[in-house]
Image 1 (cartoon, rainbow, N blue to C red):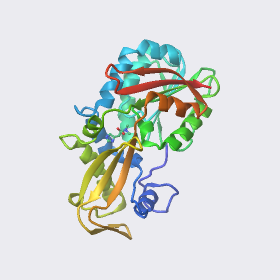
Image 2: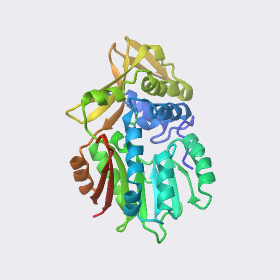
Image 3: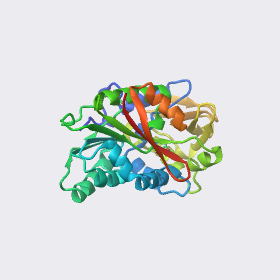
Amino acid sequence: MARDDGERGAPQLGGFREDVLAGLSLPQKSLPPKYFYDAAGSRLFERICRLREYYPTRAELALTKKYIREISRFAGRGCALLEYGSGESLKTRLLIRALRPSAYRPVDISAAALLRALGRLRREFPWLDIVAVAGDFSRPLEIPDFRGRERRVVYFPGSTIGNLTPGEAQAFLRMTRGQVGPRGAMLVGVDLKKDANLLHAAYNDARGVTAAFNLNLLARINRELGADFDLKRFAHYAFYNAPLGRIEMHLVSLGRQSVGVGRHRFGFEAGESIHTENSYKYSVGEFQALAGRSGFRGEKVWLDRKGLFSLHGLVAA
Ligand code: AVJ
């Protein structure tokens, strides 16, 4: 299990406190989206996935169901399966049923979400060798018993890769290419470029669940780092930045104010924002080109019926 990022005390390189202090000190204040997923945030994200406006989850599930046989054939039955950002592992259950992997290694930053999923998976697949890894996959992680004789396949669904800049995504794919080796493969879920109004609605739902998810980051900083963010004085703001091909989420200060985080203070002008997330969207060609610069070759791509979401089958080049 990975170390506790919420731990108080001695500064840790890249820990929650250090990342928050560093992010709030930047000219454009920003916070890493991986910190959304404490227990409350993971539950809010699961609610987002059920929203009418949030099409990615449904589209990816639909295409996975529709093409499950082809997807399994691509990955190869009996492979060793590593999953990044497994969360609820909903689509994974379909995949495991069809693929019958020899081993399954779910990795997620939220130990709470991982534990909930783990109980279910163990009950549903008593024959499967599962070791869960709670950790941050933005850095190389030691995965127990992953390098056997079987073909190694990494499953990275949900368009989590959209949180990375294209440069970071390329580095991440390169690292994964090293992990799966020359016979390995990768299945990556990637949200597609589409009408900006549809994108906008998906990140500005009528019920305000996405707003609550975004604001929970400040609540978490209050809870874990002894900060005094007034949640009523920040507002959720999400828009599609077309030139950069990404949704940006921000928390906008509703007035001039100052916020304490431990012994530190941060000033906010009215309208000043904290950039909390990027969610990059790719055309099929754009993503295949990115994979091609990362030691992979795009061999397969599956889309849902409406062409909203893509699942890429990449093989080591
Ligand atoms: C989990 C990163 C894929 O970018 O759509 C959902 C997170 N943020 N609504 C996304 C998210 C706001 C989601 N990812």
